[in-house]
Length: 351
Length: 200
Image (cartoon, rainbow over all chains, first blue to last red; front, top):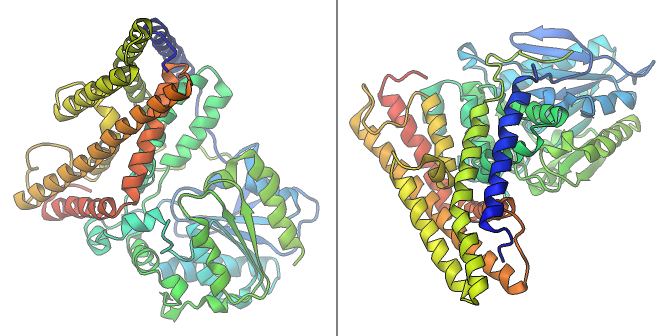
């Protein structure tokens, strides 16, 4: 039954318009939207890559540093989005010494960067820098989403340099039936794409992600926004997330070509057929302790895609942490702040 | 260390995203108002609500189809059907292939026609999902009425419309046709790009 009368609907529309008009003024007065709240210092730089060290929040942080390898897609400030939504803060509070790779924004000059550059050169140099800086034989590595797949490749090829590996919402088996991204990319002519455009434009990635749920992400979200237009704090939180969503770096062409073809289209990681810099990646060489963190409601990296790691990595100390939430909620939800960083830190500190 | 404008395009919030969807919501409200009117009339006259519901949704489908078919028509209403295609067109435009009806200068006419043809098929698929969503919404409203449940506001109707669209669109997205068509759409766009001298 339809409760509201035509007059009530008219009144509802009038109130909506009034809130919109009033809210537009609030929106204009907000000022710049800041992301990334914790103090950090650049400690190593190579090309566009900057390795940051976050200021420890305990007097004597754990001697083995933790290096976070974020995905090449989107920006890593998701890990430290705002004061009360910062996975990195949780790790620091638990006594860890946290470093993060910021990949920067690839431009036309980077189109020939390959996965070997990203994995062996960039990640490799950061790992070596931290091993030397902390006088440690091996460091802890935390890979996020695509960064987790890159971290798995590095850990397989240089297992002696990694003490413990944490993978977060990381795809391993790209051909689980519920993997929508693979479903979409399967028919794309990746060679034509890269040969034509050079780098993969971030806007194309944005479209792909929005097209997974367009009525919510490109429609309803903005209608709901009108409800919070008079709340500056809620509005800032919304805009911070909005900024992150649309802050999509282009993807270096050659690296994208290999990732799209070998990982998404041909599922070579789980088959042990990925070759990086002439070396075959065999996940059975991932022999260090592994904590595999996945989100049970992840629509981008389905849990099954992550959990496949259990069956193919060589670690005898393999554990999983299931978070009840989605691909983004695992970083920014209130529950994630309470559950995820403490669990990761406890697991690391025990090893 | 706060991160503010380290992106090459420190994209502030595009208020047009908000305004477009707000206008679409208002257009949705205008379309749903007669349904409310008919419902309350039927209620007063002890009429056939199921039949009234069916008639209204038939009219709604016709209005949306007309709006989507007419480029000079009711754009805000059309967006209820074409949100995905709009996003695609913006993406294509950012790659140097705007949504013009005539081939771009310097672009191979055959590649352009191939792209237009695939885009047409893509729109057809989206429209089918949108039509299915309206059928589903009609069904859900009928079920609610049968259960004696009341929709309390226009926003609740809008949320139901979103839910139904996500359901039918999601089914289509995961089906074999969409994946293949999505790939062909991008490949055809790249064909235009590769054959011409459009800027990246």
